[in-house]
Length: 256
Picture 1: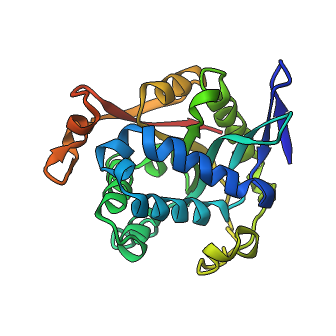
Picture 2: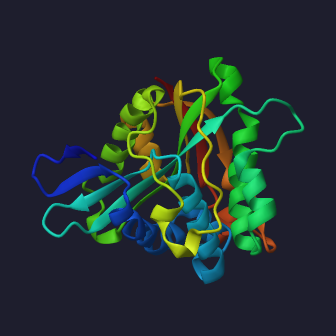
């Protein structure tokens, strides 16, 4: 499903589909896993197996049918992606979140486990469901653009359309995907059960200056700021590995 074409006609924003799925994973592999602050902070950028585990997380999220890609109009190359996840409020303090379950049951590498525990930790510090009085959100989970296509506002377009997609979810996923659509490498995934509610907020953890600018431009409210120096992997803080002691992330949301 096509959502938007840039003014210069160079890029289209589309729902993630069978034909664009592997290209979207390639963007995560080449961009997010190599350049993103938290990927560097926990050593994902130096661990190919940990990268593969994050790609499995993306594949699982893709089953929600709310992820988006930016493609070139001339060649249909996928050059940017927003892997989005529908999050439903857990019913009790003893229940584990989606990220916690994935880290504990499906990650074998310490690096990938560290990154996903980071996401779960930061999410748990600011309960956006309680803050907004809602039971469901769309989370912009992984946002990435290939280096040669950056500074063209593709991340902003992807996040803006993600907000619109979240608003339409009450009528069901606009572009649902099945386990079979993802190919044999992900045949072990469990088919998604129907979600009986719909997002009332869109949320994100902005972990870089670029994504923080996107959130500000789209008028997300920042509810929590966390220094990346609070997180340690293999004896070094994330900020030490990044090479920026002042690096931080933001927990942000916008009501739909």
